[in-house]
Amino acid sequence: MEYRSANRYDIDLFVKNRVEFATSIRDIDDVPAFERTTRAYVEAHIDNDLIVFLAMDNGAIIASCMACLYHTAPLPGCLSGKIAEIFNVYTRKEYRR
Image 1 (spheres, rainbow, N blue to C red):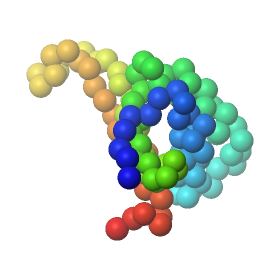
Image 2 (cartoon, one colour):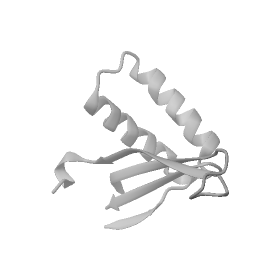
Image 3 (cartoon, rainbow, N blue to C red):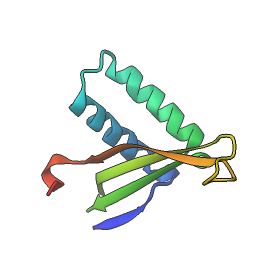
Image 4 (cartoon, rainbow, N blue to C red):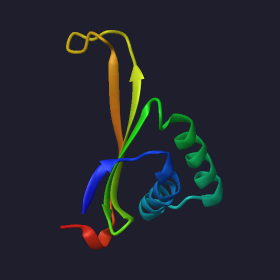
């Protein structure tokens, strides 16, 4: 098993993984549109303000999470105002526990 940050070469696998996650927790009216907009977002942000962490097993994503980075006004505990929000922590069912 390998743990690493995703890069541009991982976009296809990650988008499929995120769609798998989203459809496992809710009904999505237009899955192809969700996949397209997810791909566009990841392509636009992965080298800037999006960090995706992957757990890989034999070339397949078995777990992932993403952190969106943004700036806010300085906070007492974070004077730079650089904030990360973690989204979509997901592990494929067969790898849980």
